[in-house]
Image (cartoon, rainbow, N blue to C red; front, side):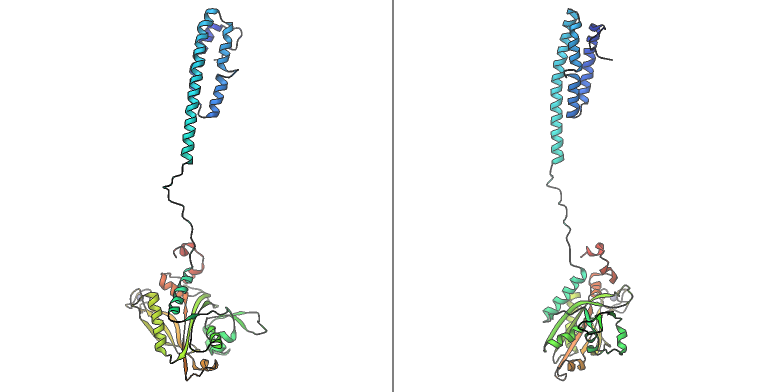
Length: 359
Ligand SMILES: [Zn+2]
């Protein structure tokens, strides 16, 4: 119903009805005003200079004296009531808003902290360090050599000349460049060239461990990658024998895989050692009884090793009647697979966080 704005109507009846109507509507509107903006809109609509209550009060002038008295009293009482109700509602809203701010800004010190993402060493790096630590504790020093190597160090000086059938054992990645006009260059197929480089520079007694990457041109499968990490070990001294080799490797395996491990040397062939051996450790899953991991043999092949060939000792300028040496080369990834229970060598180089985060 339109409110009286003055004019030709029965102002007395309308005004009284309007006071009652305005009373109900205004209180309902006030209760519905949910925030400061709505409250302000209500104030302007009802109590403002051109508001509905003001219009009612202005309309009083057109009433008779009696009507003016009764309607005026009611309108004034309504004004006082609405102003008080407005103040009360404003206080209510202010408190609610304050409480909401407190709730939303609250810092809960009992919440667990967001975890920091921490990096870690790659499992192959960890394994490399464990192996090198073991050799360091046995008196070996750690040296490194170049990954791009001369054919001379990678093959020839290790008794593998160009026409030697043993070259088939290493599928080689050749480099189409030269250094100081010297070629051929290749990506080293093993870390054994460091044997020659070390013996060129050091006199016996020599004890070195050489970690580094090696590369082979071959198809990948669960145990083969075209890039691998090797550690080469070389010892040259008076009176060294296969017993020293076996003792050294046994100590290494026990440090890596437990005190109860056994090491087995089996006759094998590498051109730069004589005799040569494949080194196996008894299976740490079944302790030699035979299982899936060791292909039911009870042993796991770990590395190649042997006594440094006397011709190499001589070619380095040492008396092979006085000095002997042993050497071993191991693939760190294969050892890491055993130590960490990783069943595919390719996982190490896929940068898959699901694997890497476990280390
Ligand atoms: Zn086994």
